Length: 390
Image (cartoon, rainbow, N blue to C red; front, side, top):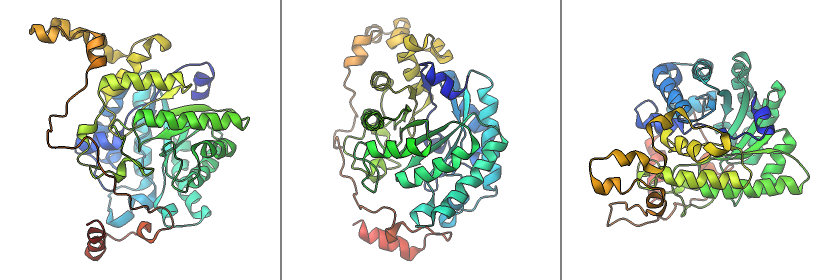
C-alpha cells in the first residue's frame, strides 16, 4: 500500500532519523553546508544507515537529498565533484534498494533554498524544486516531502511544484508553536499547505519532540477549524530544547558541535511516540540527532498499536529486560520499566548550566545578513560576524 492508503487505514507510519547529523558524526557529511554528496561519494555509508533505520522499525526510507538543490550545493564556496542530479539519483537508488528489503516506502524530499533567503522570485525558486523533482519522477519514488521550511510561503511554492507529479505530497515546516519566521501562526501555516495540495502536514527539526507535537496539534486544530482534512506528521530533533526561541536549536550557542548533553534517551522517545499518537499524528519519525535506537524506541512504544515489533528488538529487551542477564546484581535490579521511567539522568558536568541563552540575532528572509553567494565567505565578512557576536 502507498502512504495515503496506509494512513487512511489508520496505520502508524514510522519515519527514519536524521541523516545529515548521523553521517556528519560518522565522517561523511561536512557541518556547515550540510549537503548530501555522500549518496554519490560513499554510497555504502548511506545504504548502511538506511538499513539500520529499517531494522529499527522505520517504514519510510527518505532519500538523502536534504539540501541537494543546485543553489545550495554551490553556496559559499562549496565545491563538489558530483552534480545535483547525480546526487539525487544516487540517493533515490539507495533508498529504493533498502526499502525493497522490507515493507518500506521511498519518499523523495526537497528543502528550503538559499535562493528564497536571497529574495529570488517565485519563478526562480520553483525552477530549483522542479529540477530536483525531475529526478524523483524518473526514479518513481512513492511519495514526496517538502521538508525543513522556515517560511510557509516557500513551502507552499514547493508543494505546488510537487503536486504536478500526481504523487502524494507531505509538507513539513521547521517551526514551533509560535509559527514561521514571518509570524504566520502554526494553524494558518497548516491551512495554507493543505489548500496548496499537501495531503500530509506537520513539522520537522529545530525543536524537541514534545514542542513539535504541540506545534502539530495547533496545525491540526487550524485545519479542522477551516473545515479541511489532512493527515499529520512529526519528525523532531532528538535534543531537549526548552530554552529555544522561534529560530529553534540553530540559535543555541551549542549548535552544532556541543549538543550531545541534550540528547534524549530511548525512554524519552517512548513518551514522545505516545504523545504524538494520542494527539492524532500517525506519521511519526525523527530528524537531527535521531539514531536508529531512537526510532526503535518509537516502534517499540507503538508496537501494540502496529501489531508487531521491529527486527531490531531481537537484541533489545522491553524496558531493559535484557539486564536480567547482567553479571552485576545492582544492574540486574534495573531490569524494570519503573526504574527507567523515573530516572532523572545526570549530565556529569557540574559546572555547566541546565539551559543556554539563544543568540537571537532576529534575522530572516529579506535581511542583508542572509543574502547568499556562490563565492566562499571572505575574511572580511567573517570579521563582521565575529564582531557582531561579541
